[in-house]
Image (cartoon, rainbow, N blue to C red; front, side, top):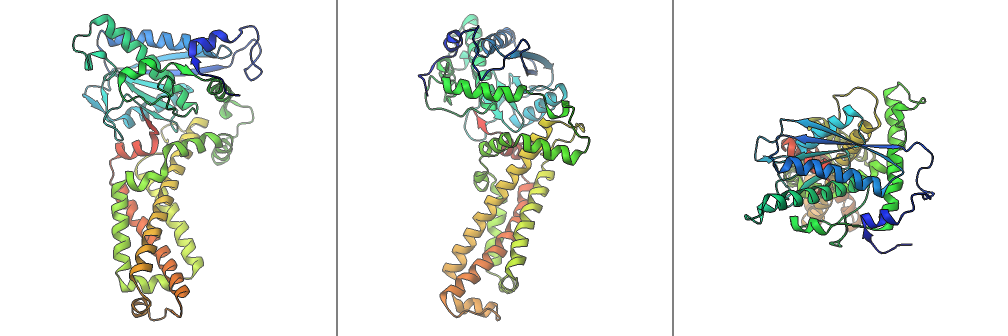
Amino acid sequence: MNTPARPAAAIAAAAPASAPSAAEPSGDRRPPIEIGIVLAGRFDDIDQPAIGQAITALQSELTAEFPSFEWRIRRLRRLEGNEQTWQEPSWLLQSAAEDRERHHWDFVLAITAAELSGHYQPYCFAALSRPLDAAVISTALIDPITSDAEADRASRQTAITRRLKTLMLHSIAHLAGLHSRHDPASLMYHPEKASQLDAMQEISEEERAELRHTLQLVADVRLEESPRATRWRCWFFLKASWINRQEILDAIWAARPWQFPRRLSRLTTAAVSSVAILLLTAEAWDLGLDQPWPRLGGLALFTNLATTAFVTMRQQLLVRRNRRHSEQTVVTSASSFLIVAAGMLTTWLSMFALAMLISHSLFDGETIRGWAAHAAIENPQAQLMLSLRMSCFAASLAILIGSLGASFESQSYFRHVILVDEEL
């Protein structure tokens, strides 16, 4: 049963320390949750103490909220990273994910003083990626001086500490599976300005229980650490994919691959142009209508798989640097591949619908018969079947050509579309 939302600290205080919930891990040994904090680039003398205090506050709040887990927060300094005023989130996310894999962290948060380039909205406090179990957070826009030039040093440091801690808590909750809410007081609210971060403190009992369940799964022994782990890479990949199937499905859903045609304009433009040219070419009609249905079905399947593999490899979405078996590597690679596959399927269906609309509404039976002499058009149903066959043929060729357009998208933007499931 749902209970009214309360501040996170109040919920922690209300939970009896001597009587843990049945859903929480029991026993003397608390399962560990490891979080890596990557400090990317240089920070000024206000950001540095604020970040340290925010990390300390983060660990204290997580321990208070979920005392049955051992929270291990590790820091890693990288002096390179924010020499430029703006940074592409996808680059920092990829680098942070490599650090997460190298150090065997469960989650990784990268913090930078550079402003993040947002692709879906004009501002970007943070970019979150479930496929990578990573988030990148910027301190640039949460500094009160961006809106109040008279803000003093103490108030700036206090505000940055509070807002950064909120962003880190929101990121961890998002990576653990919680969804956005419309309540401005909720931790999972999507703020439109930095000041709204100050009110994002509440978490419901239902969300807390969901987080506890997810964290228990995260804290379990990984497959590569299990005595039953296999050395066969293919078998390990299949087994790890099955164990983490829900996490992979959540990552695919969060990526919204049905928005591919709108987000990847070069792919869509190339595919739409191909459909138009094919439908206006007599030889294409003659060739397309000459194909039996089994061959058209095989062509559709082949083009979807081939374009998915081509785009995935061309944009270097698969994890390659670490050759050891790892559940996290499997989840990242499988999620990336399936997100692209779902996006290409969406594009194929869009091109099929476009071809059907054009062919069935603009081309009559006489025109089709003139272009494909063998086409038997005896009734409207026969014309509909011919339009279906030609649309399937045109859509399959269109995404083959469209994948070339997708390969010309910049790697940073394409990775952003595939891997970033929320800009905060």
